[in-house]
Amino acid sequence: MSVEILTKARQVADYVAARRWFASIEPRRISPVSTNIAAVLFDAVFQAGLNYRTVVLPRVRSIEQRFPNLTCLSDLAQIIDSPEFSTALNWRHEEKPKRLRCLVCFLRTQGLETVSDLREWLANKANRTALLNLRGIGNKTVDYLARLTGFATIAVDRHVRRLLQLVGIVSQSYAEAKRVIEFAADLLNIDRWSFDKLIWEQFSTAVR
Image (cartoon, rainbow, N blue to C red; front, top):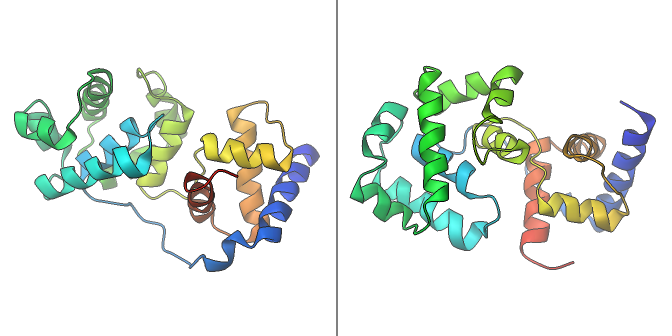
């Protein structure tokens, strides 16, 4: 770890500690958020640039309610173009559904079926890099997908960048911002999954 990264991480940790944001954090076992492969992949693909609480989450829940046993990619591939699935998505524009179909097709070529398979596959850095070749899939989406499958990682979004801005840190790259926040979590003795969630909760509900 460079001195510069450590210094920035300490600034973030001190800022958060002074506001006691983490006082209510409860220890949790890091695990996939769902075994429903459709809900997990939809969540990952559709979250970018949208209000999570009002746009994405209701549709995630709709998928889980309408297709409670959809745990395999092969089953998802069979119904992804069906009227029933379209109703669950309730989505007019074609771009993001197209990205979802492309992701499903790609993951099937990798021999994956379940969320557990996906989690094991994502443990390989080369596989995460391969995802970046898909249309609409960037570093944030890959890290967010990893979080959904149970990895204690940071997905650098506008809320993370807002925190860095408030602290007075100018981050030059996604990778640098991620490392700063990861090490800030370590300095605070908070697992990285929970720290990412904490930042989202703080900045998604209020303008600071």
